[in-house]
Structure formats: C-alpha cells, structure tokens
Length: 177
Image (cartoon, rainbow, N blue to C red; front, side, top):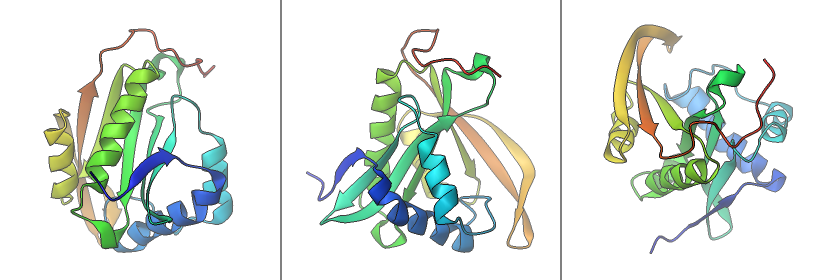
C-alpha cells in the first residue's frame, strides 16, 4: 500500500502544483517552458479543466508530492477524444511509485470519461519517464528530432500513445474550433 493518496486537485493545491512544475522549468528538460509560471497563469490553467481533462494530486502527510493532468491534444473538435498526459513528481520523491500511480490514475479517469487515446511526449533524455509510459502499455509512435531548444542545446521528443477501449465518439462536450 503506498504511503500517499491520489485525489482530484483543488484550487488550494495550486501553489504546490506550481512549485513542483517550476522546479522542472528551471532544472529540467521534461518541460519546454522556459520561464517559471505565475500563480495567475496556473489558476487560469486550472479553471480551464473539464471532466475529460482533470488534474489530480498525490498527497502524503498533508503535502502535495506530485500531480498529473490530462489536457486537450489539439483544439479542433475532431481531436476531442484524444488527450495528452502530464505527470510531475516532486524531485525529493522520485522512485517511490508516485509517477506510476498518478499515470495509472489518469488512464482510469480517461477511460471513465470515454476518451479514445492518451498521448505522451517526452524528451529523449528523460529515460525514466519514457520507460514508465512503455511499461504501462503506451507504444512509441515516433521521435521528432531537435524540436525544442533549452539549456543551450537542441532536444528530441519521443511521442507515445495508449489506445483506450472506449466509444469512438468522445463523451466529452465538443469544442467549436
């Protein structure tokens, strides 16, 4: 039994979610964001969440130790059944099963929402993230060469995809774009 729980995020969790994310903005290639996020930006992001695009947190002893989210893959209506997964674990809590539990929870939530597929994008130097996705059934569908530039170097991104058993027409409200 893990020493943490996973639950839907609330607005009260956003400072911790932002702090975890901003650590990776300034220290890692796992996000291509360059500037740390403000509280206002994170709140706007959170307000845009839907049943199909939830945010969850892993909590241990009252502390947020990780978070995950499903986000729209693209804005056009035809993509409504596809979502991109993001998982971030506090840097002091790696290798304890938090990331795996968060991603498994996202998969369950995506299936329940009637999504058709989940997409993951990972820089090729993030081998642990890529290995986790592959271990949970994601398949590598391609690598884009030198598509991001961070920390004075070009970075490749490998995309993975998990096909879900669900309705071919998403249960989520369509966007109008």
